[in-house]
Length: 193
Image (cartoon, one colour):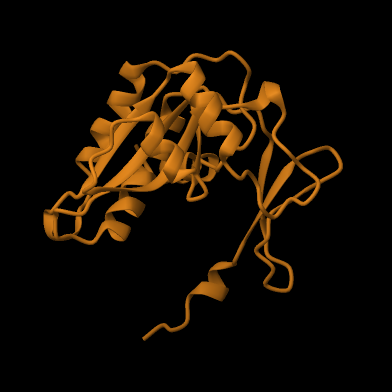
């Protein structure tokens, strides 16, 4: 893979809130995606992140209904036919002395890129109902639910745009294109020595 192919993969791996109805995401695809997350960088190589894979329709439905989708979009709610096909729950094993926030970021990056390479889309949500997760799944007390990652086949037109007046809130155009403002390179480089 060359730089431009990697750049395209990263640009196309956008958080998606609209998924194709009745698309199937199977355990094997999720396991292959997590196999890449497993080998990503880990602070002190402690590897505190664990996962729960969810493809059961009833469980996916319950997680979807209780999640808070697109907080910046005041007049939008996910429709019945836009729901994800699966979830990956990311857990922190509190018995392992690591840096779970670093590991979660590295892991999610691998998950989102691997999903995109398989034709899937993801949406990480800290708003996942952690109590519901404990109710639905066997989660030992030493595991803290960090985020839920919705997975499915994307059904959304997403466009990267430069920020205006440093506003990073995403928004939708009249044609429902989801615009994601990004700071310019000049805005994030604060020194060159």
